[in-house]
Image 1 (cartoon, rainbow, N blue to C red):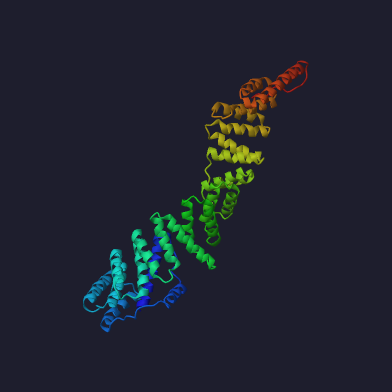
Image 2 (cartoon, rainbow, N blue to C red):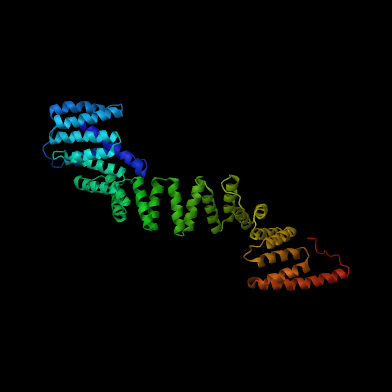
Length: 450
């Protein structure tokens, strides 16, 4: 009966600790309990102690209440505490009997959420000379967990280090708990050494380490700046625990390592699984495709994101979408998007890009309009390029003399001076030739009204 109670207490403590600190975890399996029992088969222990008849008669109703199907009320638990204290003074007076009473007191206080008192009673139990060795090991671990719950990591570490020396074969969960405590005490080297040891042992046995173990290992490597090892751990996590957040972290680490191809592959996989659900993620994927010279795919992602209300149709985002369509040679799709962007932007940069798109589409009147609009708005890193667009559109409209001052201004930019001068040479000769033909009565289209 006491064995069942101890096992119940251990499972409850471990489950609660996992929920509070590292998320829900599975309780220890029955097979592990059996393994722990086998650990003690070859251990030399003192002669088995027993609870006297008088003490046993008093403890039986206490055990029945604690192990019953109905959870005891706070009033009942408080009554049990008083009853157990009375037993210590009157009936259960041997060292072994006291250890059993302290164990029940510890559990009663724990159930009352009086954790400090629970710890005190468990420590009294451990201090008894005749405490059962196996029970001592289990209780030592329980005390460490309670200290952990109270964020008293120093004391948790001391109890766990004692537990390591007392347990015949310290189980992996407990060693990982010690690694977690080391981490919170900023003893990262000791934490990493221990978690690496446990993970390696589990892998060598052909089993899969728990998700939280790899998560701790990944976090430790990340804080040390060992991103290549972070990648290795994340690959294990996405293989055995394929949660989208691990894929996202893997993509982020690839980005830090400037492995844009790998980052693109991961982000695209997440997109196919519909796991990219916010604007930042979709924009990142679109820019990755633009960087990989796949503008059509970038445009599709941006367009879909805007239609679904995920990506805001800001001037910058519209410009990126229009530019992607333009690079993909989808001019008909680029023009209305860039026009929307230019209409909501105070910067001339978008209007300049729109003018270039109109020129490519042979809509020269619109190209002239937007190029002049861009120059008027300003905020152009290379206004000379916008003037080249404006001049070319004017030439296409047979407005040679109007284009001449535009190209003269463009020639102020050293990088395009040669091109601007070539245009000037062309339009001067062509304008003179056309004027001569028109004087001689030739039916030649003149400058269209702009």
